[in-house]
Length: 283
Length: 285
Image (tube, rainbow over all chains, first blue to last red; front, side, top):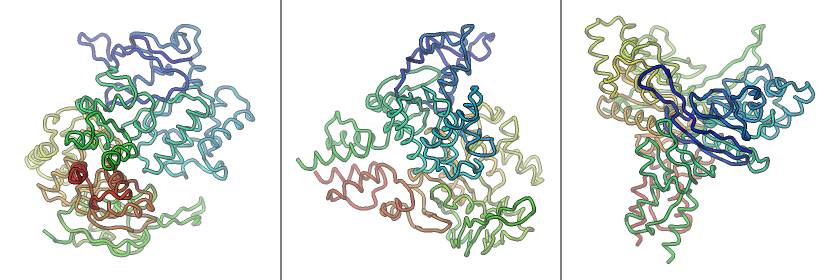
C-alpha cells in the first residue's frame, strides 16, 4: 500500500519558451503507516506536491500511483482516492460551514453516499478520536476556540476513514498548548490506527519531535529525504535554503566547536541535549 | 525619550451577544481590569495563550475597540472620543496575522501610498514617503511589482511600509509572523526592530512565540484578561514555572538551561540565548 509519485513535474504555462516549474521531476513513495514531514520555504512547491497525492492537481509530466494504479487513468475513481487520502488545508477552520459540529463532520461521509445513521456513527467516532467534547456536538463550529475548530476540521476528514492524512500547517496560528494537543492526537492516530500522516510544517522543533522521515523541498525539487536526525545534521545546508534546525541542535554544535561536547554529538530535543551535557559534566 | 505614549487604566472589555430580538444572551469579559503605561520608543511584547485577551487588548490602543470600562489614552488623546479617531489611526497603525487581508492594490507602491493618499497629502510628498517607507523595509526593488507575487514575509513588510508612509508613532502587531516561514519571520522581526531603533517608533507586538521576544525591552504576559507578568525578557524567562502555569512554552535554550539547573548544574539564572548558555557551560570545564 502506497502513494507513489513518478517523475512528476508541474509547469505553469507550458506554452512559454522558458518553462517555470512549481515541481520539477519529483519521485517518491509514501507507504501506509508512515509519519512523513515536508519542509521547505514558502513557494518551494510543497502545496503543489501534496495536491498531486489525492488527485486534486494533475501533474504536467509524470504519474501519480495509488496502490500501483495511475490515478489519472480513465476509469480510476478520484472520488474513491479522496476518501482514502484526505487533505486538511492551511486554516482548515475556514472550511467549517454547517450549523452544528456534528453536521459538519457528517458532511464528508454523507457525500460518499453513506446513510444518515452510518455517517453519524462515523462522525461521532471521529470527533471522539479528536477529543472534541460530546457536549459541544450540537454547537455551532463558529463558537469554538481556534484549536477546537482545527480538531473538528480534521475529524471531518477522519470520518471518511482515510488511510492517508495530509495536513498543511495544521498548527499555524495556535498557541503552544493547542499545538501540542493537535500533534499528540495526530501521533496517536498514526500509531494506533496506522493512518499515514504527511505533515507540512514550518516548525522545525515540531518536525524533529514527531516525524520519522523528512522530505526537504527547494525550488520544486526534493533535495533531501531522510530521518530527522540525518536531516538536521545538515543544518548549514538547511539555512542556505531558508530553513533551520531546532534550537538545541545549534546549542550542541556550538558546544562541540568549543570542545565541550564530542564533535559528532547530534541532538534534536531538549531531553537529548540535557543527557549529553550531563554525561560530560559528570565525567 | 521616556515620555509616556500610552496610558491604560482599569480597562475592561466585554463582548456581548444578542439574539434576534436584541435580547442579551451572553456576556464574556475579554479584558478584566488592565492597567499599563508604555513609554515612547519602547518595544513591548504581549504574550498569552489563545483567548487570553491579548488581541482584544491591542485593538484598544488605536480605537479599533472602545472600552466597556476604564480609559485608554494614546499620546494625550482619549480613544473613547470619536473626534480623536483620525489622529489615533494615523499615529498607531496595526499589522494583522494574515498578510493577504491587508493588501489592496495590484502594485506595491500604490498599496503603500493608499494611507497617505487618504490623508490628502500632496503627491510630491506621497512619492517621497513611499520611497522612504519601501527603502526602510528593504523592499524598494519591488516598488512596481504585484503584491501577489511576494512571499508572506515580503507582504508583511509591504504592510509595514504602508503604515510607515503615514509617519506613525506606534506600530501595533497582532501575531505578525504566525503565517510565515522561518525566513519570513526573521525578515519581519528584523524590520520592526530596525524601525524601533532607528526611527524611534514604539512597537507593541502580540505573539505566542517566546523565541521572538528575547531581545525586546519589555514582556507583558496576559491570562484571563489580566496582566499577570510584566518585566524584561530576562526576568520573565527566569520564572519558568509561572510561565507554564499561564500555558506558555519557553524557547528550547531557556528550557535546557532550566533543566540543567534543576540537575544541580551551576549556571546562572535568566539565560536567553544559545551563546549565553554555551559560554556558561564552557566556564564549568
